[in-house]
Length: 327
Image (cartoon, rainbow, N blue to C red; front, side, top):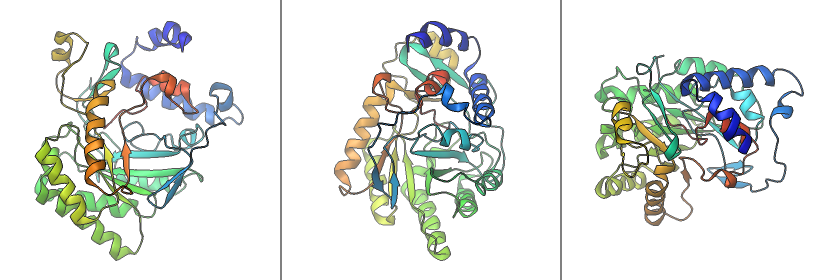
């Protein structure tokens, strides 16, 4: 880690984080295509033996890749060789969309955090579905689904339904993303009526197709107590299979970075170390309100580095994304 901080990170930080992100994915795809080359760059930790079974799936250990890092599944094969127990792809939308204008990804080095306003940039669910037709074996893959920015909220259920049907049978679980702060008005879908409509529609599709794939919902860290109680009520009513907590936050509290830098960056979702306390609070509230066996997947990063029990230490360092860049 000392070599990374002293040599590699200063060099990598000469470029915008989004460029480094794409460079790293290209680099991984190149070296993974050459037999025997990948292990020379990345050490695999063979001592991890913490398998867990939830959602009817057996995870070889509890740590995976969150949605947002590989939206389009362009690095499934190299990532599947790096020790993650699962890969969550997306957020993907029915139609391709470029996302928000650049720059849209910003480092807060002092806070070990990022602010992003990517805006669900992706190549569309059809492209992801085609790529998953030849998915590698031995890795659990989740599909994180959303709506196109141009789709009015009153029609959002159709976008979620389209993505769900396209990926049904191609992914091992689904996550419904209605909590991202980087898509205009998206989080309005967190109200009880809208949320209930979307989840029930997807559950009806699943039942009609007779293909059981777990359905989870991604939770915002910015929900107040009433909103959180409403969400818990809908979860119980609909009978969905689990939750992912939490997404990125619009909060800017208790940051070490200079205020003028934060103001200059502007809107976007905060991820990384500053969310640790709030995310843990949300998870604790959910855990107390729901049955002990109800699956809750924590999302937002693993701090500090020395506790990160992943086979791919160097990959996290290169991206400096704390493993969990959100959409």
